[in-house]
Length: 319
Image 1 (cartoon, helix red, strand yellow):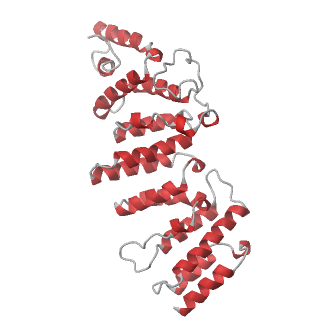
Image 2: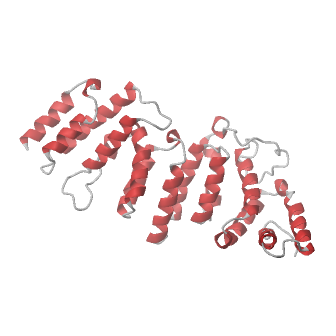
Image 3: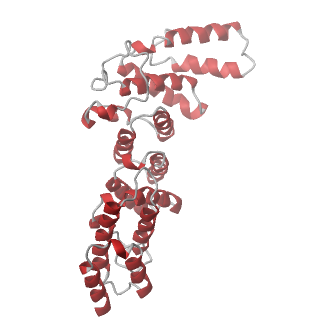
């Protein structure tokens, strides 16, 4: 068989399996493996589309084999192509002159975001198990976390369009786990709120929702009051999900992640919380203890004005 990017995964994987079994010392196996490895030495000369063909072939084998050594070789080259400023804007460029490139390059300082995302659509063919492998490899090699997070949301939005509910749920779980590996500052809080809404609608387990809340909390100051006005869960009579707001507020105060909890950030959240109090105050199902907890969850000392708080208290007492 003549080796090509579209079929090299098959003999390489076959040789890998034979090595682990009783044929490991076979002369034929050794020759076959050397032949494939010699072919793979030229991977840096492959075009982008040849790399994609090889990755697609790996996907067909990945599910049954679990681990493919060739995938590491393909992914190393794939990430190097994406991280290199000389190839980032073109899928046609080969990497023959970039063999010593360091993975720690911060592409965001060299290129615009739109230039850094041209490859997103090229990876939509990935199934969720291989996607997880690819993303973990990117994170391990210090790929730009902001770009990775944007790709994960892009993948989630497009891959789940026509998927079954089971596939959507499994995809959500994997994406949430992968997002938890990224720096907080690299993830859009608005995207996380949208993700939270979807997990609620799909009735995904509490563990995943807790993970999202842990991601939202430290960057809560990035959003506006509209994002806090989530409908109350099924079975609750409240107008809004008060318990969710309390949980993320407490996580925010605990700090964590890559953000320092400074006074300006706390003030922004306090202002948003006071607006939330005004929204929930007319709710006849809001218990006094719940209203009190909403008032007290953030330090009163950082309030620049008490106008909204007094308004909320007046509205609540009139109900």
